[in-house]
Image (cartoon, helix red, strand yellow):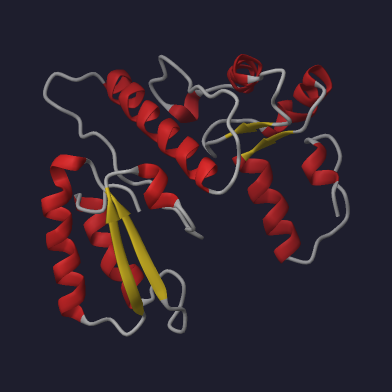
Length: 206
């Protein structure tokens, strides 16, 4: 979890350690990431967790290095972000946090064995839910590199599925988004295995 010593992270780690996220029978090891100045506060969170003696909590790791914090994790919760300061426009806040989440997302993928040829995030966005499929298309074209075997568009708030097939035709490689990956996994969990065309190569796989 990123921002584990912040207000949102602090409210979540105890519930995860208690079993509210993964169930009452699933042991957990918490890997918590914070910025260097907040490591002292994070150590305080660790002591509180230890005092609670949660039976499911089998370990706690802390770091200010994203690559180290994401190594070996099965579930990553990126909740740490920059707070809005006085006089700060919403657009400026989203741009700052977009850069933070982009770098952390890159570190997460690299920690799981992916080589990142290029990466970027949308600029000048007031509300991610106001973005268009055309913007998603342009972002994919921007980050594509000759040596890349595939393109990944992260962020479920960005409309992507309607342009995935067009991108794959234009780029000549698989293009996957958070939304298409989530759809594929949900369908398989529901026992739906038939291919679905028109939304990228992933959804045509059984």
